[in-house]
Length: 174
Image (cartoon, rainbow, N blue to C red):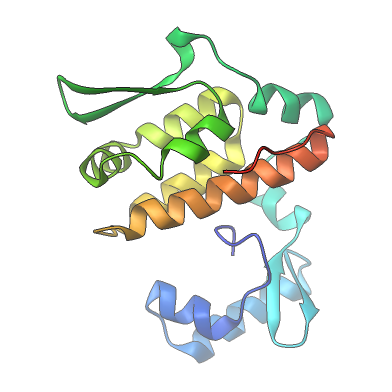
């Protein structure tokens, strides 16, 4: 549920994690009873702030959100590589910049960085524990092809929107 920033059906969760629906549903019911998840619509569930806190995800205030969205100096920017010693001459200086450029980066570079945990490390360095945890969950899925790019872009784009709302800033369109 942490990977999704919107309500999701238990059947979709079961499919994504490769488990049987009844088992997933039992766990979701338990999480809901403990208030770690909630059902905003019939048959759909989303993680709560209490659930995020239990996973070690801190709440974000306006100052934190602004710091995470801020422009980074070159030495703290993310530098894309295709492999060790093979830079792409492409850097991103902010989370929004990352969101925009991830669509243009070579898929091999995305797979290289995802397999090494580079994205989650950079997100954690920005101060965004939640996004770092989401990147780690994506890495565990061992996706191939364009799927890692699509999912990473979706997660970062949604996170930029949430952070901009908390920071009371606007998000620049792609």
